[in-house]
Length: 289
Ligand code: AMP
Ligand code: ZN
Ligand code: FE
Ligand code: FE
Image (cartoon, rainbow, N blue to C red; front, side, top):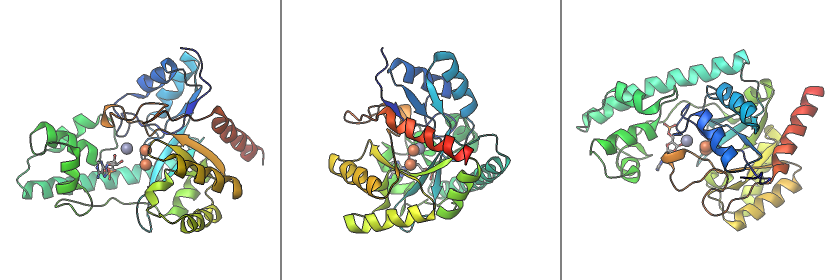
């Protein structure tokens, strides 16, 4: 397929909770005609080396990335870090600690599930996960396979979601710490899917975005699979007004989110190459400055 001039800056691989390996993801991006992608696994940079190498081999631009789950005031707060140096020691240390803390939580989730008569062992979860970041979607898969629930919604509503019988939150960095970590690793911090902040009122949302900008967030993920046209227009305008970068991505997870396609998301998502270029320019300026 010919180069479409579009990109996808929010994707997950088997390193976290996606179902394609980094190599398969980049090859798919190439087949889809994307001009560039960023790999943004949750709390890990493990897939980046393989993704970058595949990019070089297939001739598609791959940008390093990570998606950090930060402490929200309410709702969900995810921070994307673009262009990070994935060899940075502090980044590796902090992400490693988050994974250790996740593993501890996973053991505790297993105990809680056992109390509900659900028998799952850590080996099963690890083998479904494939990578080192193991989380609730992997538990969900096994619970469905073993007949403990009919679908993911049931797993989260009854057991693993907020308010569920076996819910346990994970350790998170504060927004400030997430921003600092990304910057210290040479990256650009961007607010992921602002729609999940749980702020409906536009003037409230604007205030929250401004506050994040003042903390060091440099861009807004305006194009996103779950955003309505109205939300996207609002976020594009807000980013422009506040002098912030505009980014976009599908949040592709392979079969773990079957209705979200790479590049195009749910309904004809189109993310212009300019988003990728602007990030590259920012990274270059940052390195020079
Ligand atoms: P974890 O990192 O283990 O806390 O798991 C977070 C992931 O679980 C998210 O990235 C979502 O993919 C998934 N998730 C969280 N809440 C729900 C939900 N209510 N329904 C389906 N998936 C969910
Ligand atoms: Zn995910
Ligand atoms: Fe996210
Ligand atoms: Fe994501």
